[in-house]
Image (cartoon, rainbow, N blue to C red):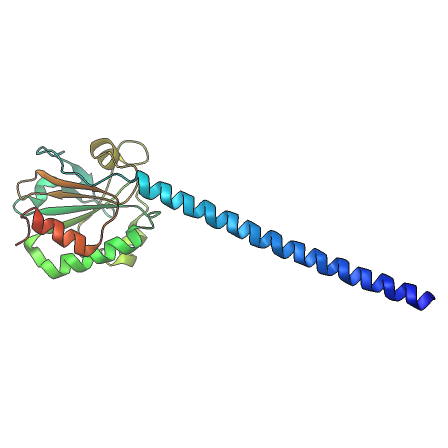
Amino acid sequence: MARSTTDTKGRKRVEQQARRKQAQKKKLIRNGVVIGLAALALLVLLVSTWPEPEAGSTEAEAWDLPALVGDGRYTLSDFNGQPTVAVFFASWCTVCEHEIPEFLAVSQEIGDRVNFVGINSQDNGRGGGDADKWGITGEWPIAKDIGGRNQSGLSVETFGARGMPLTVIYTSDGAVAHIQRGGMSGQQLVALLTDLGLLS
């Protein structure tokens, strides 16, 4: 009789442990589904509210920015005479991780027909390591945005960026030809430059 009671208690304990494990497994699955749905909803919200690319005005902010590293300075007028692509980036920008290496490949392919300049913005000048990692250090002039909140005077106050990346394309005489708020591929950049008549 005692052995039967012990066996019954043992079975009950094993069944309780199995039920607890099953409940924990269901809870983990349920939490994973909730987190996945929340992430999907956030992604949909970001995509649906991302601003459309637009053509800029014919007037350009005559910017004068310090170099990201060192004592030099870069001005918009330094690039007059050829179309210029100003590529704004930040160390926290995940889209930049894919976009900038593609832009670098484009700049190397088209050579000196179009100028490229990188501008670290909304970042307090912390993008030097990323510029090195992406290979644009030494390939492009790299400036640091200044003014505004969190070093964003040019990107936010002039071009209305709500995040990164931001790409501003200038004509050879320094007029704004296009403002791209949000990412694009290297192929889209080439098509855009061609459509704007800046790349033949």
